[in-house]
Length: 450
Image (cartoon, one colour):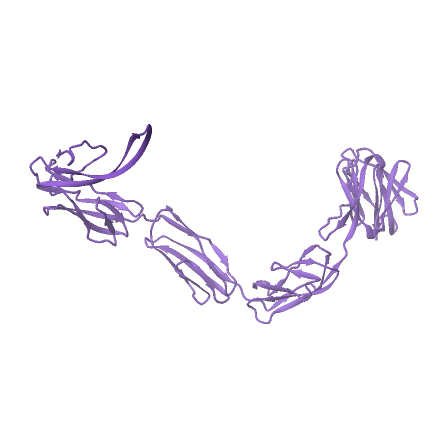
């Protein structure tokens, strides 16, 4: 190639010219440019910009050498997830004319090809990719787009779906990049149908097998059960909830294997509300009627009367070792001090503590989930007492310490010694019916013989 001066016979910069094919004669390339210049006038320096155009005259200095042959690989393979670049071989290698190439695909539903020979898959199968020169030489490569076949497929083994509901089943396939066609089917379409997207719709009570299968024969089965709709829904006749607290209301179905969505409502939302999960919230003291009905079971419903009440409170006795015991205030707990001990009496029990073991007393609101801890758990020896009929078992006592049994009037009846393992078993079969006090080193327990 010979690059001539521009028409002003000035040098140029930054110009790159690529000749793609031999041509005869002279080609003219015209370029636009922007220039900056400075000049001085009356002692001041000025800068200005301007624009212009210039022309380049180009000709091919060599004789044209046309290609005599073009070659491609006879065949090649690829997967749906990749592209393939075909590189033709032009003979002779120094050919410089008629080498503008045209690419075509015989089946674009399998793969397409661009002007650079890059093949992109669009489906599966075979297609012929042909390249052609300007002087009508051609070569063809048969390209095969292969599937990646699954070796296994799995779906959840069983599923319950409520009548009228639809749910999409998900599957796992290995390898994860396999591209087989998936087919879904139901063994009993009257119980539940399935779409080719795996969406199962429950139609009536019963069971059916939902099968997922690949086009290379790998499959798995999920047993879908549609429970019957309930004939009856039951609730407790009455329930209580503390003011500004929550309580769970549980509904039961008849028959027990029935299933349906529950729709809840309150006839007095200023007193109590209930959410879609059956959780009641008490808003003000009073009474509300809660109704529950089946979404699909027509005419099946029941009610429960809910009383919102002022909360109860409890007295908590805290020991220095972090243990505690709780007593309802409606049991009228009373504390007295005697000979270095704290005696706590209620309508249900009498407990004696060493005053040195007590850390503090607190009052807290008592909710329905409060677990009243038995008084005997708050001693430095952590004594446990269990009464089973006419047998009393003491555990975790101080070994070899004395245990005394008193009548309710304070008369001493018996004395025992704790064993070396900290346990003692006492029979009260010989005692008359009545209430007795069992006093260990740290605590006093009340028992009743009936």
